[in-house]
Length: 283
Image (cartoon, rainbow, N blue to C red; front, side, top):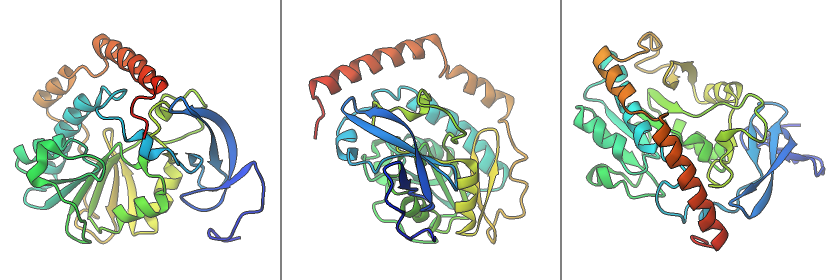
């Protein structure tokens, strides 16, 4: 059976949206407080995924960050680490893209740090980088692409992640929490938001990258796709792990795991669920 062959009829099997091989039913969660949804674990690449997400228009109709109150502090953390990291490897004038850049905060901060960054997001106007946002993407236009907390949003990762890698950047810097058998209570599922729909194992990320000529590497802060024939192929890209002490102090001062943040998280979670139950934001 090839990746594109139809699977035998079985209510406990669904084709993996990344590799096409059989995925077995793992558990159910309720999406958006409305949709009792099966999650499937692939027997080949190991990835976890929801059933095909028919609810995305509804999920993205809610404005604001809602449950994701760490979005701002995460942007600051990524900025500090990324600016130090790219500068250490001589990235200065290269054209860079933040894929799925949301508000454009990271692109703005990276531009303020001297990098030629642009922002792309099909769901949101990058208000912090509105004059430096792009609507169309062309291959070989960007040397570096970042995608922080984006890949888990892809409804069709074979096509969507393939689209990112086909842009041909020498370096793709990204974050997503790998799936390693976590159960139905895994926080990263966030079923109330309905936006996290695919969860990759590191095996899946590595194998998919190889199809496009990339090697998967890791640092303490990021995952990396390094193009095998690109400018960074011979660089020791995992050597620089921690920003200088001054940046590290600023990093610690963002307090994304503080009691106040945890309190805000509970508040917005309760309010968001109440809005869902009342029908607010329904498409």
